Structures are given as C-alpha cells and as structure tokens.
Amino acid sequence: MIAATRLGCRGSETAMGSRLRENAHPQMRFAFQELSALRLGQVPFLSIRCSGSECVSRGPWINQKPSEIIAARRTERKGPPGFPAHLMRLPMVTRSWWSDAVIDIEWEHPLHQRGVASGVAVTSGHVIVHERSTRLVSLDPADGAVRWDVPIGTWPRAVAVVGDRCLVIPQNNPRLSCLDLATGREIWTAHVPATPGHLVVSANVVLVGGWRGYTPLRAFDLATGRLRWETEQRIRTVLPVPAGDGFLIGVPGDIRGRLIDRHDGRVRAAWRLPQPLVDNDAGSSIAEVGPGRFLLRCGRRALAEIDLSSDTAREFVQAETDLVAAAPEQAGGLLWLPEPRGYTVVDPAAGRLLWRVDVGERLVGQVFPTADGFLIAGTSGVLFHLTSDGRLANRTRVARRIWALRSAAPDRLFAVAKGSLIAIAVRNSACS
Image (tube, rainbow, N blue to C red):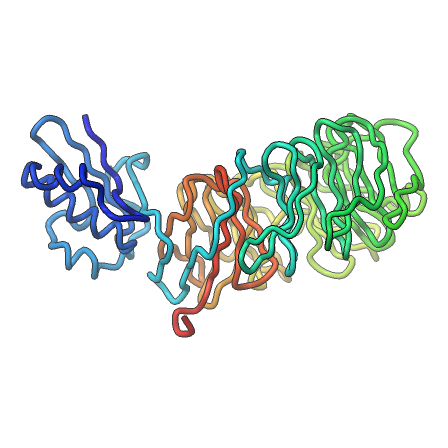
C-alpha cells in the first residue's frame, strides 16, 4: 500500500520521483500531475491511495486536466460526501493567495525542541522564545536575527514582557528571573516555591503562584524583585487578571469571583457567579472586555459579566453548544467563544449570538482579523481563512503542527510549530 499526499512542496522533484512518474500506471501519472498542482500551492486537498496496479485519486478535480485543477478555487467547506477526514491533506506552501489575504512565510527559526505555548512572548519589537532545552533568546521580528541568547533553565512555566523587562520562571529551578529586554542581562532574581505556574503583572507588581493550589500567592516589586506580600496559605486560582488596582481571581469550580489588592493581597470585592467558574489549566478563564468590565467562563456554556463598579454579577450569554473551558477572545469588534472545533461568535455589547464556526479540528486559540475576514489556526498546522461573516473561505498549511500563535501587529503572526518558530506575513493581495 502506497499513500502519497504531496511531492516537492518546497523543492524540485527527486530523481526517484521522476522515475516513478515515467514508469507509473496511467492513473498514477495523472496523480503526479495533480501533485504538481499541489506543489504550486493552489489545490486545497488531494489524497491518493494505491494498491498493486490500482490507483485511486480522491478529490474534487479527479476528472479535470491539471490546468483546470490549477485554476480551480475551492468553495465548499468539507471534502466530498463520505470522504474520511483523516485522508484530507493540504499543501505545505510558502505563499497562498486564494483570497484577498496573501500569506507569506517570511522566516523560520529552529528551536531544536518541541515548541510550547508558555515559552514564547511577542511584542511589536521583540520575539522572546525558549529553545535548545535551556536557552531563552530574543529575535528580531523583521528577519529572525538573534539579538541575545542566555541560559535560563528548562521548559518555562511562563514568559512575560512588560515594558523594558522580560520575566521568566523555568521549570527546573524555583526562581523568578527579570531580564533586560534589550540585552538579556539579568537584573534580579527571586526565589519562588516549586511549580508556581501563574505569572501576571499589574503596574509595578509581579504576581506569581496559585496554579492548581500548589503554592501561595506572592507579589514582587517589578523594579527590584523585593517581596511585597505573600498569602499565609496555598491558594488555588485560575490565571489572575489585572483589574483596577488589583487582580481578579477565582477558584475553579467555585461560584465566587474576588478582587484582591495588588499592594497587600487583601480581598477588596467579591461577586457571586451564576454558575461555577471553569478550570483552564493552561490558560485564562477571565477576559477584560472594557474598562472595569470582565467576562468569566462559567458552567458548560455560559459567560458571566462582572463590572467593578457593581456588586452584582450577571449571566452575559448562554451558548447553544458546549464550550471549551477558556476565556473568550476578542477580534474585529466581536467576541469569540472557543468550542472544541470552532467558535461561537457573540456581539460584545448586547451578548447576542451571531454565528458559529466549525472547522472540524482542534484549534490553537487566538483569532486574528485580516483585511477581509479572520484567520484561525488548527493544531494540525493549518491556517483557516474566514470571511467577515464567519464563512470558511480557504485553508493553508504552514507547518506540520502548531502549538501556539502570537501577534503584536495586524499583518504579522508568529507560529510555534513542531520544532521551529515561523514568522507569517498577512497582507492584502491588492497591495502585495
């Protein structure tokens, strides 16, 4: 049994590929023609299965000439009826222009390890990423050039950039390190308990701890690393979110949200939630959607709203299907509520359900607006381009796997792939 999905997507045909094509069964020769079209990055999917002398090419262009294949534009959301999802394949391309958005792979930086979402932070002028097991490096967003490279420890639990400082907590060493963002020079370090997990900054206070209830909450001075305060007992909380003069926290599974003062850790306000707060072990369950206004993921399908000026929390929206245990995302003036294989999209002012997006696979998280719609990423390495009203326009494979997607500018994304960091430029085709 032979399974062929793409050949030479980033290079020329091999001599073996040429011999296979010349000596192949007639249907197999046609399959190679289809694969040549794939190499040009213009055919959304194709799968070929061969057994003995029989070859079956499955795809919407099987009875068309290669020139017609190249000119075809895919409009349907899925493959042919009954087409197995695990056979769908997409071309690895360096440029896609199926819609008004042009996607270019600008550069790729090897990590020499599996990428992790907690090991990357991006700003408009800096890309900070963990690589080679113990190194933290700063890259130039424009060309990927290395600015500095320092030893920091294994698998960071968190990396954060605040102003001209970079904060990091490695996994193998219970310390919080503060680095100079321009040079990588260590400014200060502070001891923290093992497995603190959370790392959040509000004004001049760095808050760590509270992940899974393993450690107390500790607050450090951003400028000096001095310990400001610490809770007497271990506390379990979802990822804290800066709110006013403090942090908004909550225990997973509890029906209370609390505001603690960043100066001394005391509880300043509390709200009763309509449903229990969800547990997002690797991300946030709370999102700030306006000045003093926050949305919290509660129950299987709900969002609760907290306004710091009010002492009452209310249910903001109830989705029509079960949601992922993650905070809503904001993009293009809309709220995107993560589902297992897509999003429920909501009006952020009225809480009205607008539409649902289902791409049929698990998503990385993060929605990015483009000139004519939105981009979302699947963990399989595919970028999905949605129209402005949420319809699936096309898809482009940029990697074999994507673990995280970050952006600090509307025209550039950074994908943490299986073993590399990929810089992706998104432009309007009229300007490219």
